[in-house]
Structures are given as structure tokens and as C-alpha cells.
Image (cartoon, rainbow over all chains, first blue to last red; front, side, top):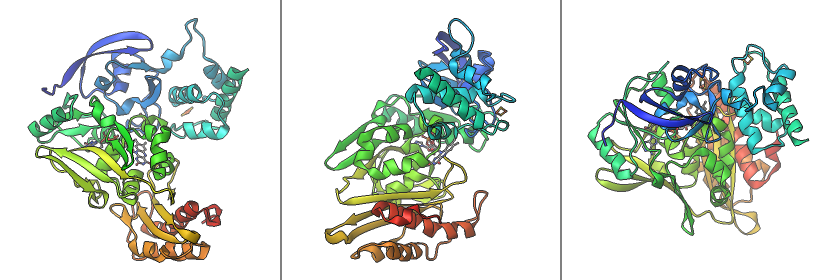
Length: 161
Length: 292
Ligand SMILES: Cc1cc2nc3c(=O)[nH]c(=O)nc-3n(C[C@H](O)[C@H](O)[C@H](O)COP(=O)(O)OP(=O)(O)OC[C@H]3O[C@@H](n4cnc5c(N)ncnc54)[C@H](O)[C@@H]3O)c2cc1C
Ligand code: FES
Ligand code: FES
């Protein structure tokens, strides 16, 4: 096996098959943003700390800045753009973020939504403590987190009724 | 920042990975990438070749036998936290897990990567030292085994030699009478520990301690066992006063470093509290709930 500086990869992004020749050094985040123009995935720190780049890979949250695009070959990636329901509009979680003013500048919001989406998929009835624990992986410089936790709790309660 | 250029290969067998490591002198192994990718992005590392071991199924195997637990090096943090078989076999793994990073990092990060990276504040190397785990290495000259107490050699330094791969970690069987405790203090939830303690205590008849293991991490250039403190516990029935005494013995002569995260003074001050809390948790003694 000879190591190569670029690879041809095929993966699924937001439900659609995508094939591209990419440089080995390209991060998944830069692939999404620059190759696919899915700029909803934000880059804050590029070393795993802020969570703005969080996406789902095979339904699990991952840091898109800490994965190579080539490592996503054969996988299914969901970005914040992929949350949009087929008929358009917002998911209940996104609507709750809007209602609860869980967004100020919005920089952290895609990562918050992806981390919270992953949480609710595995735990539809979280306590505020669970929500805080899950979102401890995401940094927000604006809101102070209270409304974000409230929004996730509200979306969870709504989904159960 | 962005990673520097490198060539990439993803072998599907251990032999394939070893051949690549042998052929490319400055090649680096890519496991979960949760320490290596930050280093690449920050340009602290610039290997010419990355050998991605994520496609080698053998490295993700988990087995529990009467001899104990064997974890492939590529077993992810999230699996250790979610598979009851694993924490059932070695309860200390389950106690340490919630302190390691966050969901989106645990889904990728691996126990082998954490051990190979050898951050002195990391949880898994301390747990391995407490448990007498054995590291299985494979290299160009075949396989060898390194006990945990000879594995961590200093900050970011281990016994893994050039061209070698850590393939699995073996934990000896956990006796029914063994209790475990874990305590750490970090700046924020999920951060590396400023200082922490991992312990086990074996209790015999009448609650007499028959064996104890006390390990401090974040307090030196590697996790360290505190033999004198362990000896102080043995042969006695632990109570709150004894834990206080043991904690102070455990931290005698400690020479931690100062860094961005904490001063040496702070680490020295908090270390005995961590030992006390971990022991109190293990023994279900009230000290656990008390504020430092
Ligand atoms: C925001 C953040 C917070 C974190 N918090 C914590 C924490 O609180 N506690 C903690 O312990 N860790 C923490 N981590 C680090 C995380 O646990 C990493 O997953 C771990 O340190 C490295 O494992 P990895 O599988 O990601 O290895 P990689 O990053 O892929 O590799 C790390 C190093 O080990 C080498 N290596 C990896 N696997 C092998 C192998 N099988 N054989 C030989 N060499 C190998 C690599 O070449 C590299 O040098 C954090 C990381 C981030 C980004
Ligand atoms: S940009 Fe990936 S975690 Fe900050
Ligand atoms: S809304 Fe500005 S960073 Fe969170």
C-alpha cells in the first residue's frame, strides 16, 4: 500500500451521495465548507475545543475539524443544513431556539443544534443536567447558555406530547 | 490553522500498518485523531505519512474472559462508557469515563491513542497503572508486552518504540471484593485534570484492607503510584481519620509542575483532597460528600 497525498472519496452528505478527489490533509470541516459550500458548519478553534464544527457522522456527533475528509469515505454525514425537514422550515429544536432566543450572534448555533440533536436522539427525556452535560462540549460567547438549555428542554417536552 | 501536507494510507491489517511504519521513518499513527489532529492543525507535528489504523477491525475487539478484560487499542472512549460489559469487568473504567472530554470527542478518541499520547493529566493511563494493565505492542521484530508501570516514561513519552503499534490493553480479572474510587479537579467539565486520584481497595474479613492501589495523575510527568500510602492502609479498617492520614502520606514529597492550568502550589494543595475523596468513594465513607 502506497500512501498518497490525495484520494478519491465517496460519501453521503445530508442524504445525497457526493464524490470528490480531495487532498489527504483536508479536514472534514473544510471539505464541507469549501468543496460543498455547506458553510453552516462553523470553524472557531480548529482544535476540538469550541464545538462550532460539530456534525453527525453515522448519527454520532464528531468534531469536523478533527477528522480528515478522507476518513469520512463511505460514511453518512449530517450538517446543520441537513436538519431542514423535507417540506422546508425548521425542526422543532430549531424553532425552540428561535422562540427562546437561544441565538445571539449565531456563531455557535450550528454546533449547539448538532450536539443537541444527537442528545435528543439518544435521550428523548433529558434532565436539565443531561442537557448541560451534553452542551458542555460547545462554547457560546454570547447567550450565557440559559436560553439554550431552555430551548432544548422545550423541544424535548414538545416532542413527547 | 490547517494541517501541513502529508501522504495518507489506511491499511486493513496490523501487518499492513507495521509495513507502512517500517517503510516511512517519520510516519505517524492516526487513531481517533483527537490529540493528533489538533497537533497537526497547530503545526506542532508534521509527519510525512499518516497511517490511519481505523480500518483494522482487529483493533476494535473487546473480550472478557476469566483472565480479565482485553480492549483493542482502537476501542473508543464512548464504547467504554456505554458498554456495560466493559465497566462491569473493570469498574474503574466506568468511574473515570465521565471525566474524559465530551460526547463529540469520545465518539472518536481511543484508549490506545490516549495511552500512546501520554498526557500526564489523562485519565486512562492512571486507570491502567492502578489496574496493573498490560500493553500489547507489535513491531517489526514481533510482539512484546509492557506492564503499565513501565509504559509511561514521561510527558508525551511511552515505551512504544519506533515502528511499533499498541494493539491491545489487558486488564487482569477484577476480584469481587475490590472497590474503586476516582476523583479529579479540572477547570471546566471535560477538560484534562489539573490533578486527580484513582484508587482500588480490597477488603477482607471484618472490613480489613488487604490490598490497596493509589495513583495520582496530573501531579508529575506521568501517573505515579503511592506505595507508602498504600502500605498505610493495609491491615487496617479504614475510617475517615485513616483516610486523612493516608492522603497526606500519598502526597508527601510531591513535586508537581506549574503550567497554564494550575500552579504547583495549587496541585500540592488539592492532591490530598483527591486521594481522600477517591478512597472515601471506594469505601462509601462520608468524606466523599464533604467540600475540600
Ligand atoms: C477538547 C478536548 C478535550 C479533551 N479532554 C480530554 C480529557 O479530559 N482527558 C483525556 O484523557 N483526554 C482528553 N482529550 C484527548 C482525547 O482523549 C484523545 O482522544 C486522546 O488523547 C488520544 O486518542 P486518539 O485515539 O484520539 O489518538 P490520536 O490523536 O489519533 O493519536 C495520539 C498519539 O498517539 C499515537 N497513537 C495513537 N494510537 C496508537 C497506537 N495504537 N499505537 C501507537 N501509537 C498510537 C499517535 O501517533 C499520536 O502520536 C481531549 C481532546 C480534546 C480535543
Ligand atoms: S472548530 Fe472544531 S471544535 Fe472548534
Ligand atoms: S450566540 Fe454568539 S457564540 Fe453563541
